[in-house]
Length: 353
Image 1: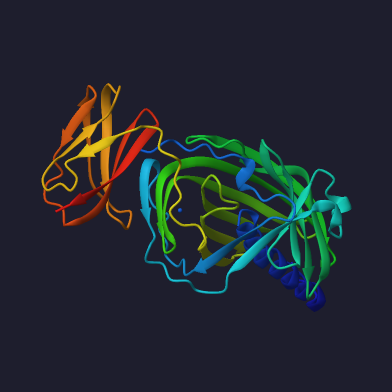
Image 2: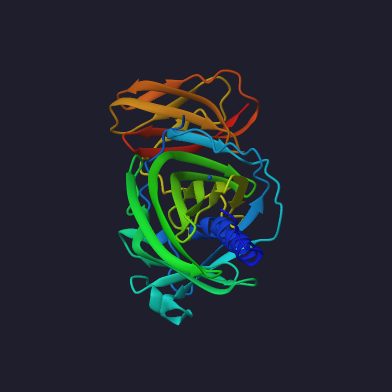
């Protein structure tokens, strides 16, 4: 099909808006083998009206989001900040221009004051109902959804999954556009996250995959999007403490790929309060440690981490109230010894000579 010059220009502008804004919106939407208590993430991690969260970008080119599973340690301590801190603010949806198109939403998030994403946010779900974009080329664009997109179902437990179809319709650049897609969510891992800001324990990672297309109805042409998003959440912290997004966009055969990553530079060394009372001796130690575990029976997992949060030794042993472990030759220094059984844990600092 041949297009007139003006129509072609407007389509390129439209594609620019959809492609680049989709990447930005994807980041702004939720914009890290040790046995820990399985975290249960609640809606407290989502910003309420007038709340915000700030994230520091890093160069995510070729980034590996790491392993899935229980008790994972993600060591991202060597990342370098690559830009200015970005702050996402939650507003009362009813105060944002164009809110009439989003009757289901109660909050609107923005990280630039120009693009606002509207959400239904409560104790059971974070559901995207679309966005408004104030674009320099095409002006004000409203992208409402007739069927909302469930991004997170709450509370979140390790292993939780969800799949949801969504759709919407909007006009831009003189064209009517239909958006349809599917989002899948999987809380696929939990454990320890090490960032340039410090070591965080009992962090839950959630993978969100969005596959959707925008079809220009009159022309029958589509832009296809694929977003793989990883979010690390920590109870007691608003917003993710770490995130990585891979974006793939196919606009009429023109492929755009982008990787972006952020970490929270303000959260350091947070962990749930230990639920087991343990004591260790001798302390300092040199070749073995005896652990007193009052009232405990059965298999326990014992781990030792260095001050940087790196796992240096682990074992699973049987106990009837006490146990002796022999880590071998550890470099002299301070270590965090942790014991876990059935989701409960205890911890003690030890000195190694």
